[in-house]
Length: 358
Image (cartoon, rainbow, N blue to C red; front, side, top):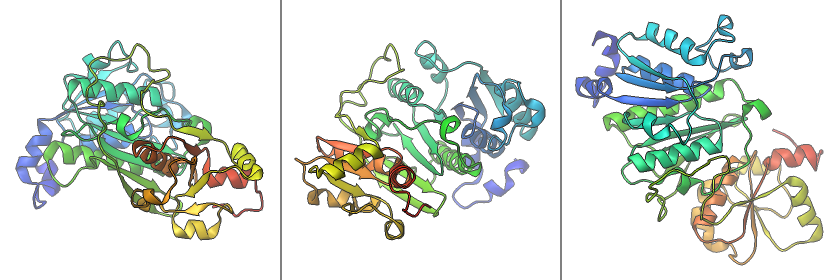
C-alpha cells in the first residue's frame, strides 16, 4: 500500500477506498487521446483490473497528444505498446487486452465482466453502441469527447441517471481530430476528468457528474456545467440495433444549420430566433447582429422567453455548447431546433471576414 500512500492519507479516502479500487474492474474503450490519460491515471491510482478495447496502431500523428507512446512505437498495435508502459507503471494492475473495435457482435460480451466503462471513443456510432450495451447490462459509463479546443464529460446510466441518448437523442456532425485538429493538451485534460469521475463512481466519494454535462473551453478557460435529466424509455433498451452506422432514435431531431444557410435566413428576413449561448465577454468581443444573448448556464431558466412556434437556431463558438442547449430545447418540447455548425468561428471565417476571431 506504500505506492498509494498519498491517496490513503486523504480525508474521506483511506485504505477502504483504496481497496475498492483494487477490487474494481474497469473497461476503457479506446487507447487514443482520451484513453491514454484515463489508462495512465487509473493504473497509477491502483485500479485492480483494466480492460482495454483498441484495434488501432500507433501513428506519428498520435504522438502530439497520446503521450504514452514513443516514436519507436510507430506502426505497433496501440494495445501492445500501452500495456507495456502501464505494466511498468504499476505491476499490481491486471490488464485484459481486447484487440478489436467494439461492434454489435462483441459489445455485450466485452462489457459484461466490468464494473464500469470509460468511453474514450471518437465517433457517434460507437457511443450509441456503448450506451445501449451499458443500459442492457446496467453498467455506468463515463462519457468524454473533444472537439478542437473544447471538451465534454458526463457520468451516464449511473443509479438511474440520464443516458447518452438522454443527452444526445440524435447523432451530430462533429468530425474527429483527424479532420479538424485538436490542441495536444485537451485530451489530457478531459481524460483526467474522466479518470476522476471513474474513481468517484467506484469509491463513492464526492458527487459524480450524473445528469450533468461539464464543458471545458481552453481558449478562454471557461468551465460550465449543464444539467439534463433521464428521458422516458431510454432505460428500457433490451437489445442492440442491427447497425450503429447511423443511429436511429425516436426523439425529435436536432437539425443542422450551416453558416451559409444562416446567412440566407438572415438575408431573407426569415422568422426565427437566433440564440447565442456564449459567455458575455465572448459576446462583447463579437456577435451576429440580430442574435439574442443567453449564456448556456441560463438557457434552462430562460425557456419561457422563447417562442415555441418559431424555429430556434443555437450558436456558440464552435458548436458544442450550442448543441447541448439545442438538445435541452428538444427535451423541453420545442419542435423546430437547429444547431449552427462551426459556430461563430465558422461565421467569421466563411461569412464575415471582418469579424474578430478568437
